[in-house]
Image 1: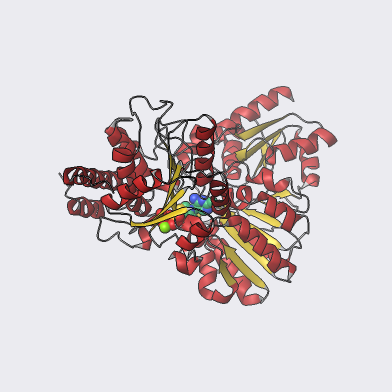
Image 2: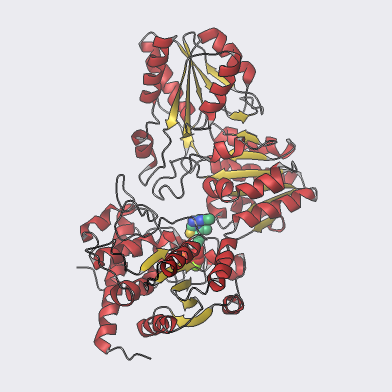
Length: 313
Length: 278
Ligand SMILES: Cc1ncc(C[n+]2csc(CCOP(=O)(O)OP(=O)(O)O)c2C)c(N)n1
Ligand SMILES: [Mg+2]
């Protein structure tokens, strides 16, 4: 498919600036990566509302909690691996447990980080965040949805996690596409199987659905950007309609989107399912697209999984 | 003070210059990576691997080798070039930096490349590891020493100060750490982003033997290592005053070259300056 590409990070920066213009209670924190996360865009416009905490993510999260406890809406950014893993206990104890208004907006998630390698990539951040009570977790499908999520987070009470990528990703939505926390979007209808993706993998699901169509398998595609809360109603109707699922995520298959979906289905409507994602492995250096192929984050893998599920339906 | 002969110093300087040229070629070929902080650590690495440390490149897991932890893992290009020039792996392999399936990961991975003692890249963690190695050496009644290089921005990480406490508490005189004090981090000068001064006083207050040197002066680096060896019951922190991008005029003190690699034109110019453009 011929995609147009756009940057999630850029839209994050743009949304922050708009929030800064609209309201006085927004503060933005970063940890020496403001150029990459694009919080620098906000810092330029609103220097008094921006705080660079240096290379000290744990302290940044504690500081964010203090701001939030004082009535501010805090956006705290770094690379996903540092923004979640490095300071998980600070997030748990000082943000999630007291249910404070801290929006953790992380970039460079997944393996499309590329050359930096495994130390800077992360296939664990969704898992780490979604296991926290009170935490909202959104993985926007594209740049436009990143913009909407950022704006929505400002008014959504409590701790939130926003996952962004380093690479530009295919444009799937437009400014008019509705976005609601807790709601997935049915991007393509089909009767035989449901492909549920998040982030860049939604574009791979759409590609897979086209190929499957040619093989006489009618696949529907869901963009499940809201991982927590999960759109259970949509899963329910998809299960009823198609009776089979493939999930796809640029994340470890352990405890990510695939697990969220399969846990729901196992409890409420047992349905054959296969997960496509990082197969419990760390990444490595390489170009983003190369890594996607090497680690099986491809339309082909989704097709393969779909055909297997079809046999079990 | 040991008087190192001029030819020993000159040879170390020659090696360091060679490492610098490798860094330029490697980051040029990779198209990503961190030339600035690699060039500022080059002289420290050269002094350590070509003179100070006891190690056997042909026997990387020799029990009694001195250990090295690159806590500022993003200086991997300098580290890899130093390891290759030491003989741990072929020089040609340097050009695979950051490419798919390479052993030369963007940040060091100990299970991929012989000579790498610890996987690093997430800042703030290496000094703790060096301390653990120091404790293990003491437990085993071994006399090998542990060396570690940190960034100055890295000093902002809380874990560094937890390690500072532990190192002094357990009197780890077999640990010698360096801070590559190049005054810059990614978003700007350290003192503007999150000031770390007075740095020497902090380390002294935490109970470390503190030595301040010019981190590009071989004699001063060797002398600091000798003094650390002669120090009992205290770990040593060498504050090495350096220049980010050292050795390439247009990279020196240039914030942009922290994580930006030279283009063809710039690489050529850099190699010419280093006298390595053949
Ligand atoms: C925990 C963590 N946070 C953020 C980063 C991203 N990062 C890579 S290098 C760097 C700046 C390092 O500055 P400094 O320690 O001064 O190193 P140098 O100037 O020697 O390159 C940052 C923030 C990281 N690697 N680890
Ligand atoms: Mg520095």
